[in-house]
Image (cartoon, rainbow, N blue to C red; front, side, top):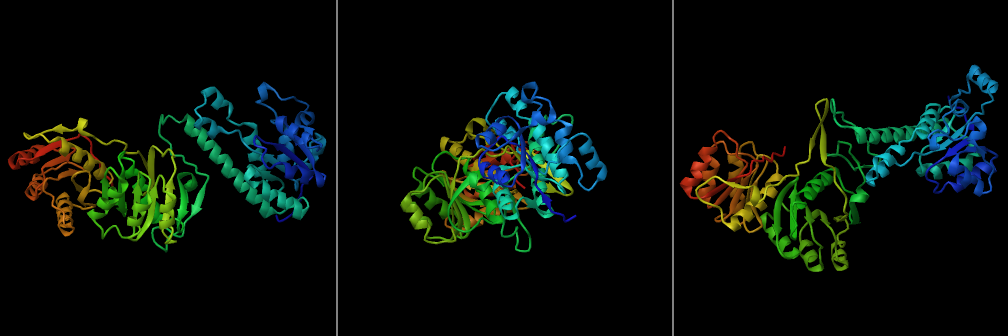
Length: 508
């Protein structure tokens, strides 16, 4: 089981030839016989290294426009033969099949071709047949064969060839096989997802190649890992590694800020906005966002949708925060913010985000479409005698964006493109409203003239009555309760406006 395998014969056929040259020269130094096809064969020959065409081994040319090149018993027999089985060795000798001890094969770029917007015909031609079969065969027979399925492993093999003179250990071969099966399963998953129409029954398949081990999970006693490419999403300018909780808050922050086009700053704590404001200038947006709840802002995640300049950075630097995200920072701002080494500063990159969301639950997984709907004034139906003013409609739109990204049950109160206060994650909508009003009073906000948004309908008139008595002048709710008339009548009685949207925004 622990025997060393000396590489005598190698099959090399790759799409990407980056950094392949050193391996070719090492194999040549060791006297390894190399078999190859097509462009790889030409590449090796141009290096001045002897190479045997696979068609000379099989006595069959590449046919069907290159679709069939390596699919032959003289190739797969040499890969799959078990060196410890006398019968396998006898058959290799009988049919003059060489043992192939090293296979270096990668796959046609299927996923990249799909993402490029290529035609269906081009995409289909990038479904690799021979390559995937070679990878699986070599990985299956890892006890006797080394498999490299990615250029990312070239440097490791090069070092093995140099230091072990062409010999490999069972542990090395098994590790390469593990990587190869990871690559093949990922490849098949992306092909399936391209063809998947969710008929006759949806199937859950995900495959993410990149991962990052986190310091820990939600709590120190839990392990945590992020699967994805954070480097594509953010350019980190400063600070420690993002934690599990940081990532959860950053995800919520990105989703919220994407609702706004005007200069906006949001501050989040435990995925809920504790401050958000839109202004003509980003510094003013920061000042007014912080004013909403400067206590909760301590240790929060801050996100902006406009460049952070030195003046704004100076103001932000006055409080303790965990993460600051923006699409750009001036050089002066970066110098100010980097003075505190642990605070994480991220430049957000333009990356398309997934349209689906999923999470583990019970003994399975639930998946849903991302909530990409937010209703503006055009989708608001006035159901009261009083019509909302133009400014109230703008504020209701602002509040509706925030309520969509706040934990249910929630009430959001806003005025002049600023979050005034909110009640979040309560088991009762009345409690959410009462919590919001208490917070507003604590931080010196007068809610008179403000508007109120709810993530779900009002089944009773109590919230409307409490809000109106506090000075709320307009209310937004989805509508749809059999008791809608109770809250509508209360609005009419109190002389305030109500609009319905027809869309509920629960967030559990």
